[in-house]
Image 1 (spheres, rainbow, N blue to C red):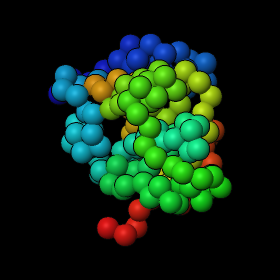
Image 2 (image 1 turned 90 degrees about the vertical axis):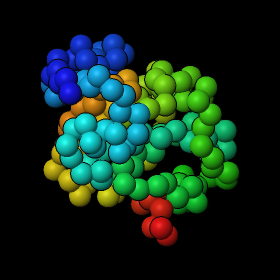
Image 3 (image 1 turned 30 degrees about the vertical axis):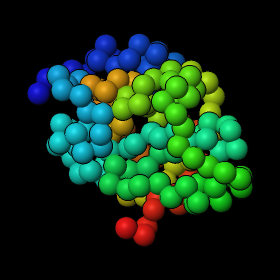
Image 4 (image 1 turned 90 degrees about the horizontal axis):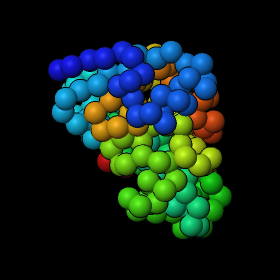
Length: 164
């Protein structure tokens, strides 16, 4: 396991976003992909619920980013209610890349190509530190969840599936 703490381990667009925000965060890069929350938690050595998944959905055709902990699934009906919109569905890989500028498995919570509405599940606040993708499937960064949600300009909501 290789770990770097410089922003060179991050995707260049995300590294620029960190600089623009004045954020100095720990970034870890791993030789093996951390595309899934399970892989990321194992690589970092943290609880699965400390991983932040940045998932893109379509709400009435408009992209929305939903931040949820790695141990949870998103309840699209709760997303629909939080947005007060009609149909909500997972975005295609093409829309994810077009909207965020990143591929699935490496989407960070902020630093996206286009300004997109962000919902953040309230459960993220249960931790002192969370880890999220730094723009590549091989890199993650640590930040306290309140700051992460603020920099993502996220709205707190209860969007995780509690049925399973």
